[in-house]
Image 1 (cartoon, rainbow, N blue to C red):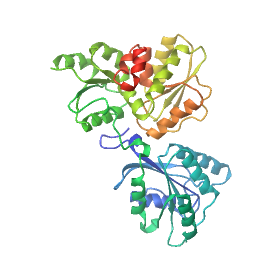
Image 2 (cartoon, rainbow, N blue to C red; image 1 turned 90 degrees about the horizontal axis):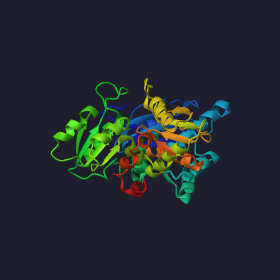
Image 3 (cartoon, rainbow, N blue to C red; image 1 turned 90 degrees about the vertical axis):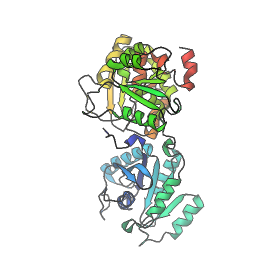
Length: 409
């Protein structure tokens, strides 16, 4: 749960610190963030598991820095650590390959190939320049046209150059245009948000998608009104002009659709976030698989966070119940929670992904791509709820790129 003054992890540039053991990754990370975040030791292999931290790096802004185990770790445990490092590479936006001994080895070659193969920016950091000669490696990097900087993390030498290199990267995770609904509203519009008080949110807080949407409305010079579902009809009656857009929590979409006039655009928080983070068309196409489910089919509920499950949890209880009632089939629902997406998904007939407010666009897109690679339909919580409750055509109507699907529904 993020507080109101904090940029969520899902809206930060994820920077992975990669390299062999004892290259100085942790020292470099500490120098970049400006304080001792990671444990530093001369002993190789100090960092065992990936450690991520949301930080503000002046002048880069909100970032997620991730310290990783050495890519040359050894033994059975070492292999498991390498696997976790590779998972970090998959979801990172930027890869910093740190070298601390003047050697360019097969490990660095593999990291470059992996990052470039995933079309991720690579910056090579030649660290410990006080005691290492990098003249030969610099020739190699120049010939390969690889970006690099020289640093001495212990006294912050070269850190400003590294920050500048990161700043110069273009379209990192698509965060240069971080608008959630900015393309479907305009300055002066009135957006009405229907927000049930979620039991999963601590007293005094809204849940993250609601907070981020409110901020996005204000950033686009529009106006936001927030109401609970019980006050919606009364609020609509009091308005001199109807709202330009209504966004509701998916759990009350059927009631809200009944209260909001048909000519007023209506969608859900979960739908706008699945569009912002991923491929809305893929999600809408995937939801139609619900009509094809058979007895015994397995469905994966994919949660990006690790929230405490409530008695009537939306992903683990309500959605499985609604889908089972809709299909009349005996289905098997499995849940995977946390930022790491399951590696083995081939046996699932459908994946139901949450809105992904706590993970980056890169990580969210990787989930969609993993499903697409195996031909497994994937959809979103809110889209699935709208579908089984018969209001999906209306919920996707505000999005111009889906008008063909609206017209054919």
